[in-house]
Length: 245
Ligand code: G3P
Ligand code: MG
Image (cartoon, rainbow, N blue to C red; front, side, top):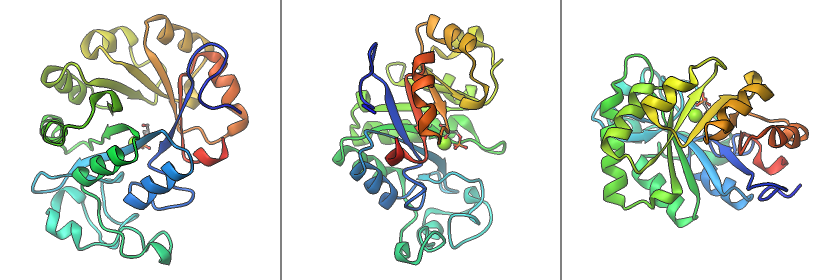
């Protein structure tokens, strides 16, 4: 299948957390391998360390994807950098360092990837603090804004993004179909809506597209269904297995 263009408009694929079917998620190795296997868009999750450095990891705790344990937000950057984030996946990835957002931004620039950076906010986290630190880094790094999309389940985070850097694209993530489209449009003015693919119906797709918003779905790992989602109006499929499409 031609993944870059279909008959009506550009249709895209996004490598979810890198390529977790082949390399540890949210790591530099995963980013490089996804790019090597053809990814042009990548989705990664960012959170703050205890000393407020944006780092890249999905879970609230360190247990699943690192050699450590406990809450990420209770560890300093120095403590995180002592952990291994590849060994759990496969011995050949041992020695993989806990990625900080700064080096991930550099890597995405080098590989010319478009980054969908998810602001991952667990209930005890402060949305404003994460947004402020991430935006500071983006500015310091002079990351090209046309290659960046900040996404989140957190409305508060996206509202803060809009206040601080309105020109930066925002994506609202939802696992529910009835998330209140009109309220989201008004409060967040999103570039895109990212829906759990299991709740998408043609009617919801029509409403989102009718509002002039880009429609993305996650996490869709069935290549044989891609065509019908694209035909429904989906613009971007976020998948764990970009090499299979
Ligand atoms: O960006 C959509 C998707 O990443 C949201 O779910 O849990 O994989 O971060 P999760
Ligand atoms: Mg995510």
